Length: 351
Image (spheres, rainbow, N blue to C red):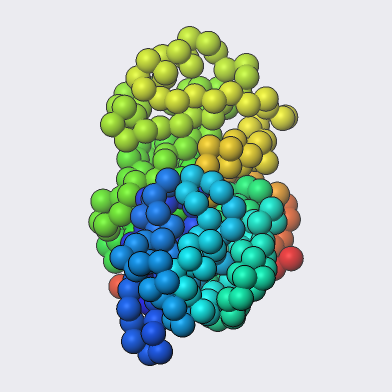
């Protein structure tokens, strides 16, 4: 199963909103073939693994796959029928498909056609590996990961409105690697103006996420690096329905995609923001700030995980990470690492 996950990882950035899937065909303990899902509309991992096996050629063999094989017709034929046609005797899968529309049907179909099925091998690993897919199917919204870097005294910037490097270069490289794990990256207008960021992956290998800006009144500067790179890299601005038409038009003329949402109390409603991203096939979003946006997601409980990078520094003054947060929130530490001098905490919300 570990090998299945290694194979599946090669599909990162290519397959979403589909899951990452790898498959291994075994004859006893001998590996006969391997495969993985390469992209939307392309062969599933099982089909890729069995592509050189003739009908009946896998008789008596075992197929190991990290996700339940599909039994329905979609962009590709059902994998369950293929497994039976190839002669596979036994299937070992890491987890049941979380999509309630198809969950368990592939397993039931295989058993009805005489194939032995074992489910739940390294299940927690498999679910965590496809956390974006699992969340999107079970919660009908993208998986939301909050990320912030702070000093020991909880400051995310030394001066409001000015970008302040908080963590070291090792942490920055890790952030760029993590950006490749989610298909969208979201910030608010304040951070876009203050930092003038690119929001790309530069210090790691992998695809750039879709850059998303919450900008209720369509005020994103046309000379910002985000707008100037919109045609090449893509940029989505979510604004209110009452945003000035000329401001929206100017952004669109620069290649920015603008989607209007009805404001609530003068703010973009986060459930509608996530609903919009989910409707675009984006099954995960990394929220990088700033402080106001992070606080909004926390107060509304709209997060699945958080990444907190802590630098061994005391600012003494500056912008607090969660100034004005009304609702206390607890976290479980599910991982902790060192990146250079910095400490990285991976957190899961409690409750």
